[in-house]
Image 1 (cartoon, rainbow, N blue to C red):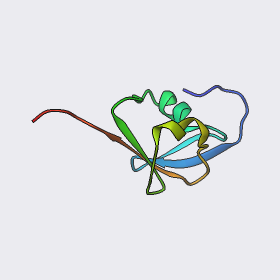
Image 2: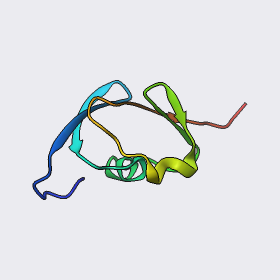
Image 3: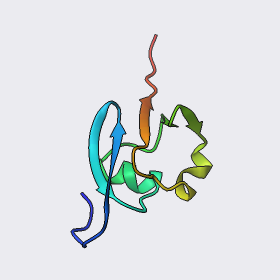
Image 4: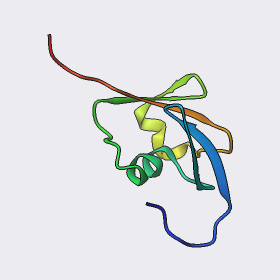
Length: 75
């Protein structure tokens, strides 16, 4: 998951589940650490939709609430 290097941990809520992650993680790193896809999803951070082009620049902070919304096709 994340490197075992001694880093300050923060608690976040992702899709309703509390998780502990290292400080200074951006959205892309967060998705990778939980093996979540980066395509066909939307990210909501503290009830605000985050544009995909901004994922790399936004750091997750303590007590952030993240929702990962998957788009499914069909009809």
